Length: 318
Image (cartoon, rainbow, N blue to C red):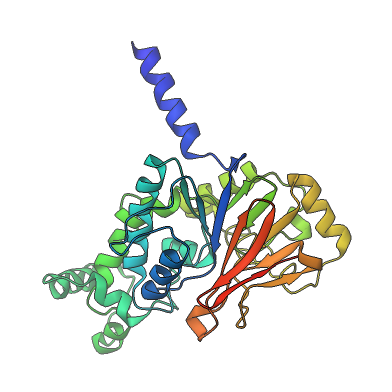
């Protein structure tokens, strides 16, 4: 009985870490959201993935969101709650929602909060926020992490109501912290490779499994962050060389061959006029800059065709 239970747990663990998927008939890919809940809902409804009540109707479609649902915008919490709900609904229908890790998800986990919008703090505020902030202030003074005599007024500017609740929710056992730490940074679906930033020459021959495991490990143990994939500029969450066309074709071909794919689909680098491409369409860029007033578009891959879709129509990607 104990052996059976152990094997069940092992299988569940392997299923949670799955990062390659084959024979998927339809893929919809959406880039950076940055707290723009209304815009995300509009795209999901236009794609026929959710109904007017935000319930999954996409059947066996695989939805890929390439990271950066957090920061810059005010409704990141609503975005996370929606994607968490859709993950379960899609799975029951035979589809999948792949919420990939971007650099801003990682930043919120390890505490780099430079880009958190004021509306995000407010979304976590409760009737106990003032008491929690007072307790955290006093505790920090006692531990010496805040110098004696440091003005509380200045400290308050970086610790608004909701700050403590936000940080609790992003801890290892917090609702959102636990969810993010389980995410993949990179997945292969059919002959398409999806991730947030890009693959630099340093990691050109590193496997999908190794990338995902190393980044997840660093977000569970912050001592592994320094100089690791999750933090460095040429890591998969941050790298822009492929998106900017700065890499050689030889490097791109190495990446494609390593992962046995035909193309790489990236977020992270805004394309304000809609979905963009590099390297004759072998690299597709789907961060359409909704946080900066860009033109909302998403990608559909089905029946051997790749299309960029928006509210006015669609166009083929080579």
